[in-house]
Image (tube, rainbow, N blue to C red; front, side, top):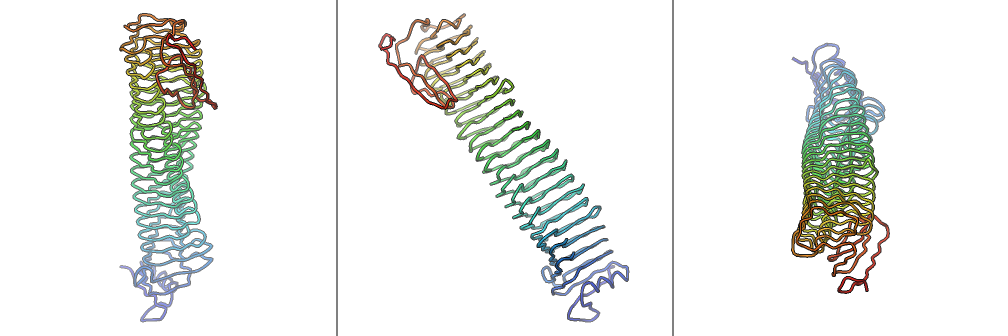
Length: 570
């Protein structure tokens, strides 16, 4: 049983006038001690050794220990503190050198410096306590923080370094000038916590640290909600980040696993993976991102499986020599492009559904810029389901495009391969190639185009085989300028328009149609010629013929020439 000591500055039977004298008496006896402290303000530096309990006799907040420019509580042994308020400046307010320290219903005010310092090989627990202005520093120590509040830290609210292992549960961290929690070359677990108003990342891991986060809420952060860097690892589960600059970031070789999280209203990006980082993201929702929902750049290589991207600007962007694999994602209601692959990057998209975005997929860059899209649906894209340029190379397999202006388009020196894909009810064309682009299609089906099934212009090359074009208002296939290639074993059905408008450079083999085939010299009666330059994709205002299309230009011009009823120009 612990020996009982009473501290009462106004005196009393067998009472000690201050805490220090009670500690000396306890140390002299060498037994476990319970020191009960009467209400008051004590200007003391407490050095506690052995098995000691310090208790505010009349409950939390009734005892204040305040000593500027000195450590207020210095412990080694097995020490428990209940209900005290500890105030310090310019030094560690609480320091545990060895053994265990438990702070329960305690307030710690650190107007500068460290609030709690757990040194190597010690164990410090904080329960139902409050830390203001300073930080809790665990250096090579073990720690547990439960149901605590950290407010207005001048640095990081909690720092876990040098191999320390700390668990933070059910706590709130607010207003930290730098991070809410930083773990560096150590292990930290953060569960069921709320973090808000931090100057930089609310939670950050670096120097090969491990950070485990679950069931947390992070709001109003000036940097990342959660950041992994420098080969750090860990996991994030069932966590919501709202109003951060970036929701969850990974950089410099980090590789987290993120599951069932919501990243809402992030000012720049929801998921940001860069500088050779990786990461696996499962069943996450990215809502209303200001710039890009999922961003891989500068060698980043994420895998994203399941989940939803809704609202905001760009959906998924893979740029600057990055790679990514994306499966089972719904992308909807964006003001810009759903999927973007630029600048020597590569991406694989499988089982993607895109609804009501300005464009579906854009690819642009050198020959190392590649994308594979499989089992994907683009619906109600305002401009184009797929539009690629530069020297990029894109493969589509079992892809469906519905509504919008253009199904699949290729320009510049890019190459687009299309297999087992369907375009329905576009207003302009099912598929097209211009510039020096190459379009290779097998088993392509275009239904109900408002103008053309497939077209080629400029010096493009088209290799179309075993494909079907049905009910295209103007022509199943149209070839202009220097476009070349072949149309093999294809079918043009319907009662409107013509089957093929040729230019003498595209070989037609095994064509099945009941509609008219026009040779290069023949011109069908109908709407006037239009030359269209646009920024993101072709715009057709009515059924057209003899079209010339370019996108990505800075200048916009439109020329129109009238035709007589026999098709000759007036």
